Image (cartoon, rainbow, N blue to C red):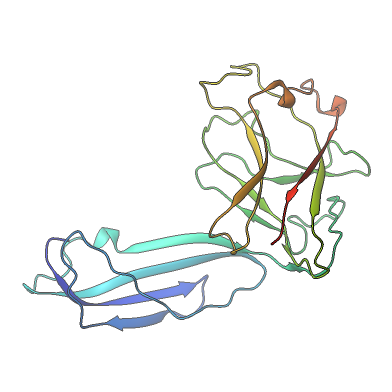
Length: 231
């Protein structure tokens, strides 16, 4: 804004739930500065949710109020996953529900594609999970598939992650270090997604150039990641 704000209202809601409003007073917020406001906790069930927050009726020193109302709202999509109380955790995507129970998908609005269940190919059984970047024209988009929260209740000193991967690089810029290429990362978080640590990464090299384009001729490559350390 162009004036010092001394008070305002902030409202927020989860999905289509009730709107909660909080009145902020006794502040001096100069132009170009920011303030942190702690809101009351909202509880969301397992699944995808939309959090919406907006401000209104600001009070300014000059009495001009809000002269730019177009930037008063923010909206964020997030996912709540379930708890995996014991190990091992196994998912073969044979169930028709996707994402599977207690798993989650963060859909990137800037992406043309997303993680999906597929019955076109499988290591065993009839299903697998896929993301079709082959025909997508969007670069630098991130799509996340999130596991349940894993409780290491047995206090194992190490936890191993393994999966089978099949991939086909497009014919454009194979192995390039200049142009954007598909990248698969395995990450862990101990603080509910505030920070992440990369424990496995496959990109750019011939390690991804595994397959012919015909999906029924996929060659599945087993992957094991053993860098998860709890402490």
